Length: 81
Image (cartoon, rainbow, N blue to C red):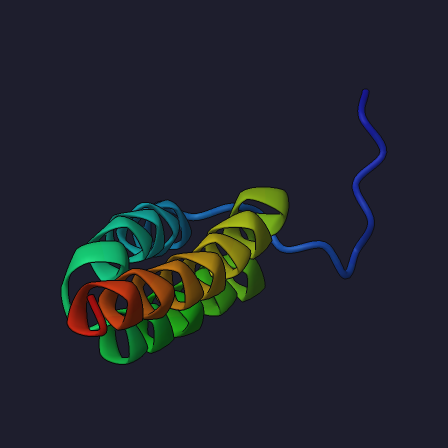
């Protein structure tokens, strides 16, 4: 039997959906409105992690931040060329 701590939340379907949407918004943030979609992806990743999709939710939140920063760098390079 696996040892499950009493404080650990079981992963729900809503947690996985939030995590997947966070990854989708991270990719969208690279191409369209990086601050908006990056922030939405960050929030959804954190919500997914809190709801029980622990490692993947935090990765999605980080990917959203990276996607937003990368999108802003790309848009800066395009507008100043």
